[in-house]
Image 1 (cartoon, rainbow, N blue to C red):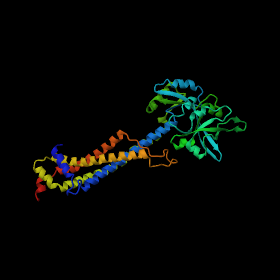
Image 2: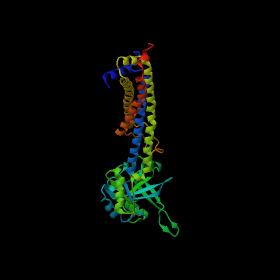
Image 3: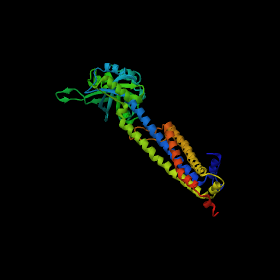
Image 4: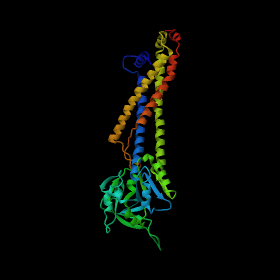
Length: 410
């Protein structure tokens, strides 16, 4: 596109009267594109942030790869852990115990899960992604034999059961001893030594940690554990590492990655993100119709000017390029305005977190925002392509004008 086409297109962007730089129709079309791009950036940023925040919080409690044994608990877990750690991509493998229990405090009873951690993990401060609000995870390994075993509970459980650090919580397991009267549940008091926060209401309200030796004694497991947790170098390669571990151990074991255990959840989030992108793109499509109508009105208004330009030697291709450039200018300015507004609003949401969510309903309490460059490129490309397509028919109509017929009655 040469200087002539660019100059004329910029002149056509000016208002007919010298009361403003842009005509009202041009302003409305630009604003429509800007609003559509802004909405897309904010919604896609929130969806991406929600997915990544949920993934982070799930992995704060769940392992990258879990190894279980068919038919029950794992006895020779030390040998199995040594085998798992030889698999490329595995950082370490640690044992764990996982079982459902009942929690009993004065005036309150609730259900949940108790997890046993190995002493090395406890001495390192517990799961790294958990935020310890009171006490220390290392205290879980310091209980004397004549003292009640120590536990770490979530902040929501502490609030619901009215517990604080140093108080006691009775834990009841249905996996009790078999007697002539039937299977009797086990019950034992535990001392609260730490209160943590994971960010997921379900975990903070139902999950309790203790050491593996204490939990083995409470459940009567002897030297058995539920399974192994394997940490991997790249969490997105967990499926591949899980397959390698499965081949290493054979068919007597069940090996599952965090991606397999949460596949339906993250697949639903991905589908929802794609659906929101398609739906909100319709806003830009509506704005593109505004660009097309603006170009049609310009063609009708500038019929005489077009005829004069063509009689002076302007080609049909030049006339078409003039109106394509005008439409792309409207779409481009709107896209850049929307990009700036969207990034600004995302920055405000991320910094001030002024939109709060009920923690009883949603797994997070605020709207997380995460902007990815690929998402921005897709949004900008979609807006510009739609704007370009909207200019083609009006521009083609302008290039098809017959200059003789256009100026015959002038």
